[in-house]
Image (cartoon, rainbow, N blue to C red; front, side, top):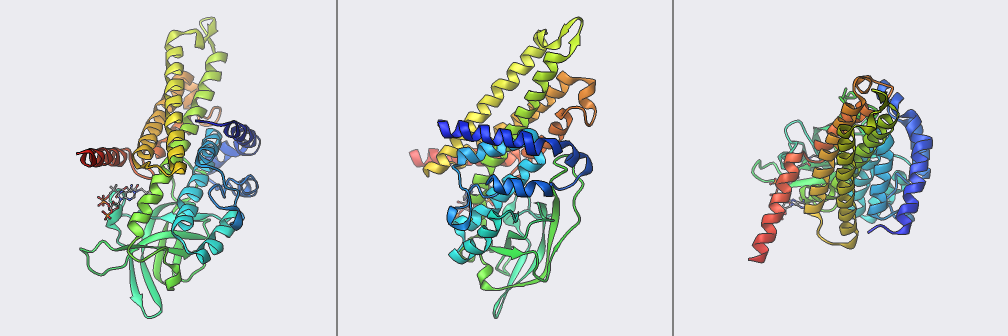
Length: 382
Ligand code: COS
């Protein structure tokens, strides 16, 4: 499945991640601060324009390469990994896929230059039930007036614009939801305080509030009423990148545990010579490889134009659970020192990777999506 170009790309991103991203990972977590200094090198490497065509200034790569990029960056820093994944898959993708030429030129060219885009779907009362959106857009003579709040928005404090959903029908029974592109500088757009999180503490997460935010018709993404499906389609791709993020974190946990087990001497020999430790490492490596293959296969399907809804949900589900298990095993192998904040990344990975089982659809939602897709196929066969 992988071609020579993918191996070369991995080498390039791995070297970049070790040189530029890893040295700051611990500090970002401890200080809970956004990695502003990463923006320029990430932009130059093309990691903020992985999906953006060259004509808008992007450095596009195929989805396997993009997954490799998210994987390798997350392997050393989950906070930077999620920033890249959210910006590319959730911020740039819907504009590229559903936007007008004017919207693409306006927003994607800025995104390719390192200005971040955000994705506003979740609300306090509409998480897994994304169709339960309460944010309202009321029609006025020359546009729309939007009121509501979005929560848990990745990079909310720094993003220059967000693709956000709002209801465009007053009828509570009517689930007419529309996507709008909203800019931070517009009157009525405000950012809530940065959230204090268990993990991914270098990634800024906050509410976005829209208070009588007046926008023109040009702000609508695609057509009125198509927002819900656009967002679900966006999430289908986003789930590959969250899978890649979980995979990178899992690999980071294995890197750390393997080195530690080879160096740590107890009872006169490195602990790696104990079968109990070997089995844990072997299970980690095996599961990680399985997750990797699933992710690359979903990426390949996406680029080939094949149906990949079930595969992206499966790879996200599996990789995030593998990530949780790998992080827990790394903590077991490191023992007491693993529980300390600082000397080794294992505990940071353990905290960071939990998000992968929650964001862009919980594991329960992934199972629901997978089961629905299987049922759909069965019905089609009959
Ligand atoms: N991709 C594209 N379209 C999809 C889709 C998908 N994965 N899943 C459903 N759709 C379409 C359906 O085909 C349906 O279209 P029609 O009205 O033309 O038939 C429409 O979207 C509504 O689908 P459905 O009725 O199945 O929606 P539900 O309200 O039952 O919700 C789930 C479906 C639960 C799958 C959806 O709400 C979901 O994914 N929730 C999780 C949201 C999430 O991940 N939030 C985290 C965001 S963090 S960035």
